[in-house]
Length: 136
Image (cartoon, rainbow, N blue to C red; front, top):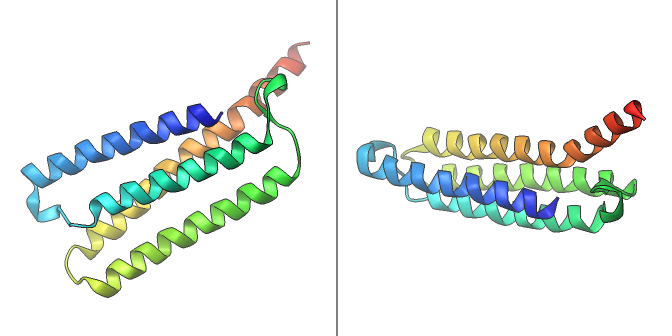
């Protein structure tokens, strides 16, 4: 699960880098200097989350989450991630007056993309296991 989450997150960040390069070259009016910071922040947060997930993963049972403490830790990490996103946006809005909408929109877009990836990676093994149990 950790490798899958890290791979998907890295792919999203690479796509974000390519999008940023295209934006800087062809739409410079939408480029802002803090754009790379959004990508780095989300990449770092996802790496931390992947290590937390790995700690709770049951490798002998198809990658299922093995204990109930996982859900508590996972939700705490989600809250911290949302808080870090809000703080990052607030810092930018407090320091800079230009491109505020672009920055906030980009930060929220990456938050939602990463939220979707995490949800898929965490729930897919549990869903597959339930389907296998129904068939048996």
